[in-house]
Image 1: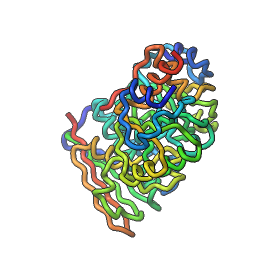
Image 2 (image 1 turned 90 degrees about the vertical axis):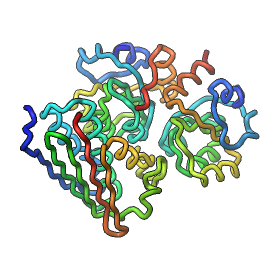
Image 3 (image 1 turned 120 degrees about the vertical axis):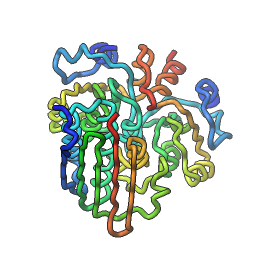
Image 4 (image 1 turned 45 degrees about the vertical axis):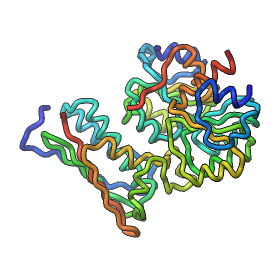
Length: 145
Length: 111
Length: 116
């Protein structure tokens, strides 16, 4: 299916905090959509990794969140908004290896302090806003080559 | 084999516990899960991990490990280094991945 | 290295379609932290892990990992095995620990995965 310049493909998902069983479902569906649209594999991989990390952050830290994506002929925009604790110091949170994850999260294989760096690394544009006690929003854009 | 041999052969950077390099290495354990290391590592093992959380120092101390190799050039926070120094835990660092460090150690210890 | 050769070296039990044993594995990554797996460049890689959670399978799919080895005879739940089958990701079980499994494969010539 070739990309139509005027058409926008969208997705919208609710993510429930603590639901590790279905973790990654939203990212998988987005990945399948990009594959269907014929986007090249390396770009899909970047988008999938960035989205998966973002999705995991909502599952690990927040009560709930919403993930939306928009695909145009030129790029994909992924937006996440969560109702979570917020991030006190974003600069610190962006440092590789820094994590506030509790022990039980580390025992599940997350909380290595690489989530946000991985998201930024795989995005062409990366924006993060957070209010302590309210939540965090992330916007990532990945351009198609 | 002594820890100092391992440091030399694998060109590891020694971050803390430089006085313990005469420690005997009894074997190697790899895991990033602290409970796994608590349960399965043995006295005198070298521990390979990319985990950099403060609790790695306590685990190495409790299990009497001969040292910790942090892989993938992961940076350690200052509080982790200070605690490791205070507890006399040898923390080493390498740009190699866990798989590669394991491979090289396996050849060194079993070859 | 083929998956068959890897299974033989690790004396592993395999859950896979018979033809999957012919797939070629280019390199390996040993980790329990999933973000580390996502950090490395792992298309056509083998993941060696001690973590038995459903998100191991999902991480593998996202990262393009070809196959997963569970070490120390750790058995994931039935739903994880089902998910792996559904995603067509062959899984192996070895009694060896992560160190020995990695060591044996490295010795046999399998390289480590690359940083991006």
